[in-house]
Length: 121
Image 1 (cartoon, helix red, strand yellow):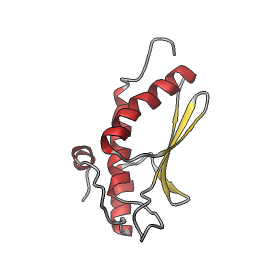
Image 2 (image 1 turned 180 degrees about the horizontal axis):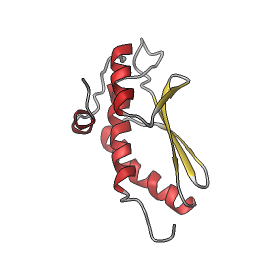
Image 3 (image 1 turned 90 degrees about the vertical axis):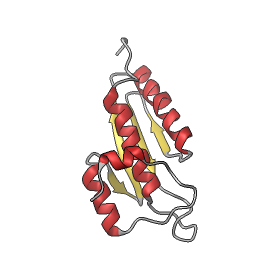
């Protein structure tokens, strides 16, 4: 069974296979705030204001860069949607892989840590 600790201890790989339905189910059991929407692993985050939203985006940029696995970000005044998929799986048609689950867990950890918070919100 997949665990959050396993995801947090893992790193993204450039060559990866698409996730099976079983693996996706295990990942969603661990990543309880994430859903699959339009073939992407997605989660919305809410903030007090635009400053906190951008602070969070900047904080997750470090994770995204370190893992070299870049999500779609939709940023608004007090919200940010993060959407992952892996373009290289399924013969280049895209889909979900362990890379998406790894990054989702690491972004959850950044959010939960509150390290991005400031005194203005």
